[in-house]
Amino acid sequence: MTKIAATSRTRKTAKPAAPVLPAPEPVQAKSLKRKQFASTGDVHILGDVTITTQLIVGGDLLIDGDLIAEEVFCLGKLTVTGDVQVQSLYVGHTLDVGGHIDVEFLIKTGCSAEWMARVLELDQRKLAEGQSFIDLLVHPAIAARQAHHDVFGGFGDIQCLGYLSCADLDCHGNLQLDEDLEASEVQFVGGHLAAASIHVAGDCNCQGEVFSETHIEVEGSLFAGEIISQGNIEAGAIGSQGDITAWGSIRAKGEISALFGEIHAGRWIATAATLYAAKYIKAGESVVGEKGISCGKDYGIFAGSVLPRSAWATQGMISAATKPRLILSGEFVEGKKLRHIDALEKKRNKELDWEISRRVKREMLAE
Image (tube, rainbow, N blue to C red; front, side):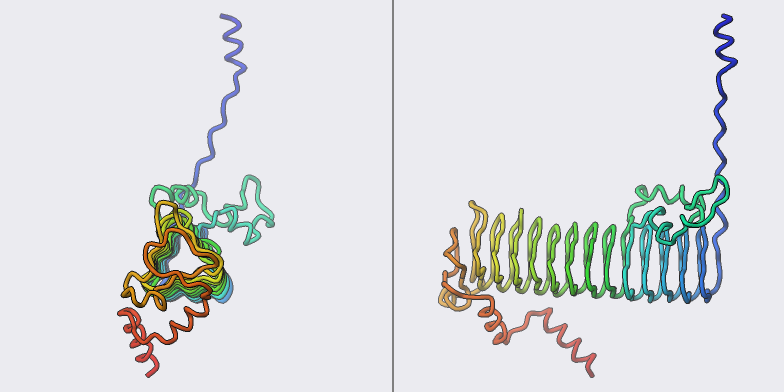
């Protein structure tokens, strides 16, 4: 009994955890026009925001108007009812915009507090005893609330009712646009990408589905989990884990491959390299793979499916370096190149329904 009592007397008492101070009251104003602005909590602006240099918000930022700034760092959710015009935009959670998004350089979502704080060089500042450099960016109570982003969903998403124009794009979640996507390079999209049309000057890398209401034009390589276009698909090279589908044509100078799916075009499929699908290859008109065409061994190649058989040799042909196996429709014609398909396309007079509407829209804007 004596030994037990002695042991209990020497046991150390655990220090109580430091209490987390309540979150600061949200900053509210009718408008905001400053050289620089920073807040570790939530911010709600009832009008427009114009910041000459940096706008830094550790919590959620809600703007009932337009946002104009040089650099924007928002660790929480950024909501803008109007347009966004900035040089660089970094968001921790979701970006929701009611107007257009114009970003001169990089737009990045899914930013962690550590990453954002280091980019801002907050870790280089002198700190008080017991203080973390993260506290300079976001209040601890706000940071604890944001840690549950997985419960609410939408982490890293971008939603925009207008167009998105930027140099580089790095989106952690889904990207949903009501209008066009114009980018120099899509470095990464962690979810799905959907837009009225997609134009990328460099590469485009999407882990989920890429969907366009009209055309997809990528000058570099296009890679996605699945690719669907209600217009044409044109890229330097095209790769997909699943299906590649276009109402119009599919064109590439490099390889076109559907690793586990099929390739289906309403018009034609053509590449200056190889063409591969794990399942069927289907085209309403011609299929051309200058360096080879191959499909799944228990599937086949359909060409000229919307043409009479008398037109197969000229418009519903299949051409490759060697005659591919499993041709189910269409006529093999040796030696045709990508440029032959391009020449045929220039002579085309017919327009699809979606092409007519876009042409009328362009003509109205020109007037």
